[in-house]
Image (tube, rainbow, N blue to C red; front, side, top):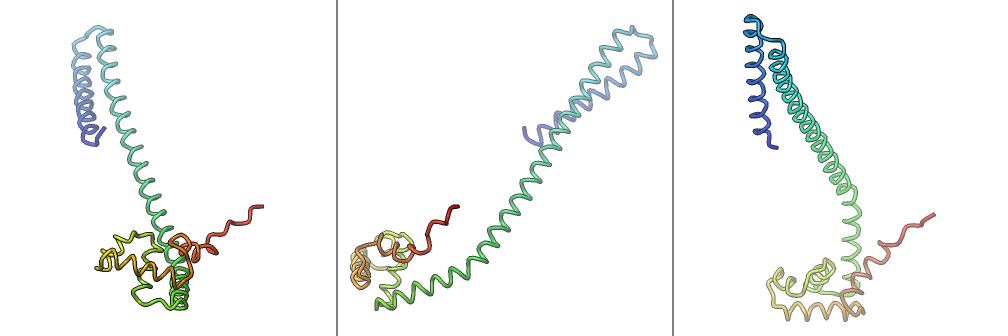
Amino acid sequence: MSRHERFVIISILSIVAVMVSFDLFTDSEEGVAVWHVLVEGGAGLAALLGIFYFMQDSFNLKHKLTDSLNENLQLKKEASDWKVEAQKYIEGLSQSIDQQLSRWHLTAAEKEVALLLLKGLSLKEIAEIRNTTEKTARVQSIAVYSKSGLSGRSELAAFFLEDLLQPQNLQ
């Protein structure tokens, strides 16, 4: 139920409660039967309970929203902290990868293709990014594999990731 719908229902119930209270006041001066006062009082009480129910529901929703927003902020902070902490490792890894690509005597274009292959891009995507043909990207990827002594994309990725992704010692 939307906030607007809850507001409308609470407003209607408030009007009912006020009207019933006014009617009970006037009825008590006229000396109406006790059962009539009890029935109208029950209707007024039901309206008040409805108001309480919807207000409590609104309060709970607001509380949950606040908790969710706080949790979201905390998760964003953790992600930001992780990125800052990981950045130095990422920079070191990037430098190490670049040094290895240089040891393989790759040209600048071949290095760029090798990095895009490591990122998992297809030859078509590499060609689009580098504004070349897919055939050129294929030839350059073959040169990367030939100069590195690796047989393909899987071995290229494994070459750099093998030592990073070791299973942790389980005790």
